[in-house]
Amino acid sequence: MNTLSYKTISANKETAKKEWVVIDASDQVVGRLCSKVAKLLRGKYKPNFTPHVDCGDNVIIINAKKVVFTGKKETDKVYTRYTGYPGGQRFTSPAQLRTKKDGVEKMLRHAVKGMLPKGPLGRSLMGNLYIYEGTEHKHEAQKPKAIDINQYK
Image (cartoon, rainbow, N blue to C red; front, side):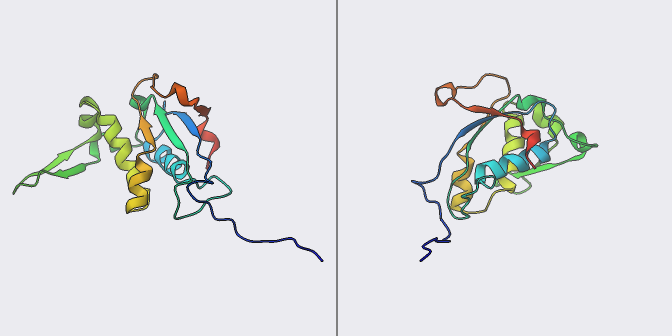
């Protein structure tokens, strides 16, 4: 008798094999980069992907200062925030945001957050994202693997 089983394997926190990856963001388009990063954080490139479990990788983005926008988005795109007071709506363009402290990090986090699931899983996945404007990062002890983001779809 053939005992071959075709049961679907569902990953959980213990069986998920999380890795550390480094992505160089030099001359990458913001939206395209962030969609690939969101898939890496989610674990969609892995064969044991499970929708309700954090089975993605820990992603380190270096050279975030060198990301680019296509077209006129650098000056025309608008980020909106609200202070909580009447008339407290504030608008910022990516060009203005680049000049501020951690501005590039806020742009990338905003883009990735919009591509992740809403709720507790999405919020926990954002904790696996580390963004640095320069080439140095403080995660050498984890022995991250450098990957070419252009090889992913």
